[in-house]
Length: 79
Image (cartoon, rainbow, N blue to C red; front, side):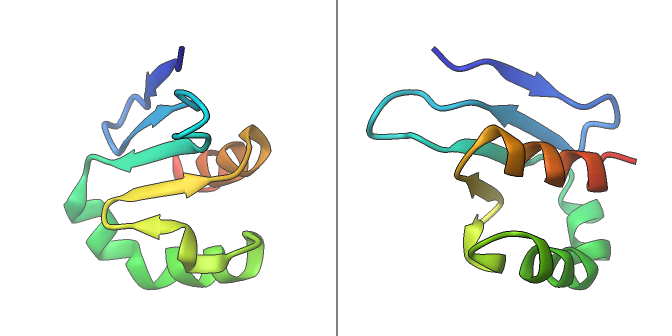
């Protein structure tokens, strides 16, 4: 079963893998205004730091392959 976590600024909800059909760590963008203000910088960071770059994005959901990648995103963008 997945664990769901929300950061204190309400920017994202985070969930771990659910099962074999949903094996990723999911970061759900809850604050669209924040995402919109920072989208260009976030995409640049994703292209530089994540294996599939911005292809991890599915609408307002990021699908990350493992906990390490999810942690990298959260450590960078939770401020």
